[in-house]
Length: 308
Image (cartoon, rainbow, N blue to C red):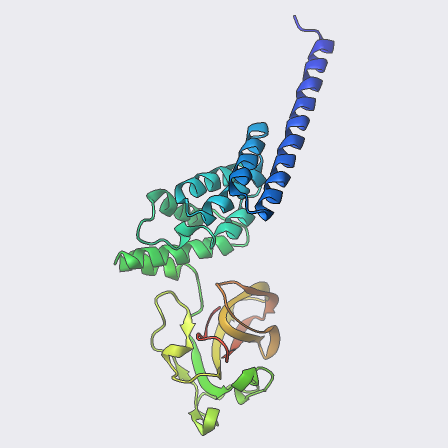
């Protein structure tokens, strides 16, 4: 029969051994990144693998291998490292988000494995508390099924992103050298659907309702206007049954100003091609109807769109 003393000694040695292995594993990970600075990929891989031999739960080692194999276009190995990464991470969602656009399987629509599709589906059922990855998974599945001509399934996933689609839009207004970003054009001060305004180069500008949006629910100004170096506006009314705190999330191609009930809640001068939920504002919806106004401009990039 093992005495309590001997049991305590065994536990102590076991704990010390775990700590030693963990320390050695972390050292190996740090050595791997140093070798990466020297572009010695063979040594990088060896260090990461040695780190995992010392501690099979080292999330950073799996992350490093995922990045390494991705740069080498070794999709199968990258996918396997990614799978082990999310199983060992206490909170896998930041790692999923970080690796989303890097790993080639997110863009390889023609040879995608079923396991990857199943993984996306799992994110639509249970994902991060903020819901960003859930929305991204629906967006990617929408594109996946669209490419396979399964339009019914594709539309269902795109709709599950829950983007606002009932917009009226107006433009174009002048934005040479991004000069329109700080100009307060009439749609920022009033909403008069029947009024005509003077737009870019004297073009008449008037609010009109969008009859059809892109299947992926992005509001693409280039589908409604044939003008470059311009500013456009989108207007929507959101009904809330009560006063409540919410997040308003916006993605754009272009600069952004977003208003809620005529109050500026988001402002970004840089013209970026980004994804959904890039800009987030926590704000308050009033009971009843709330006006949401989005101002998007482009002068340096070739796209102009948004999603709220």
